[in-house]
Image 1 (tube, rainbow, N blue to C red):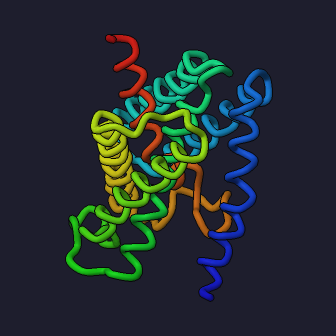
Image 2 (tube, one colour):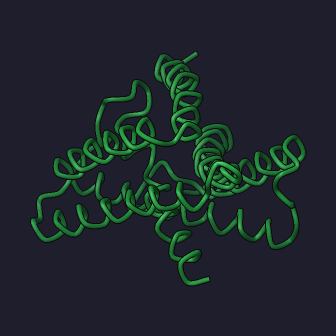
Image 3 (cartoon, rainbow, N blue to C red):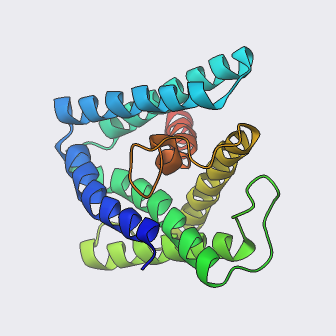
Length: 210
């Protein structure tokens, strides 16, 4: 097994349960976790851009995104925290599916913005995100897998992939492979939450306007 893939897998096995535990617990533990990720994300963004205007706009966006995440955790109280987990599962498995399908199938490139992104990866991201939520709905009985639910999953997955492309664009401008090196095999915090920082503000806005 490729050493980088092994590191990626090992990191995921540690970070996934830890992240879900902190989210489930809520309170001070979750707030500390969120603040830590916010500060590291801002640090990584600061390294990645050279334009002061873009840097400031990026800081504002990241702050709004994390604030939305905090608000969403409150909206999805302990009784329906599973809805919060579903958003994270969709984003995470969109990334996993894109990585696996992209590596195995390869095929035509999606865009010059991110040379590693392929159409197969897009399909893989959608397939994995739909599959994990369907499995979750069967096991938990807490998500009604309807046509509306399917549209919701696809929408969130696409937004997550667009967020990935945006961060990839800025990495490419800065000639960076990763936003950082804090997570072995994965890179930086922004490398892992690039989809989520776009998903949460949009879903929060949906709840706010509903």
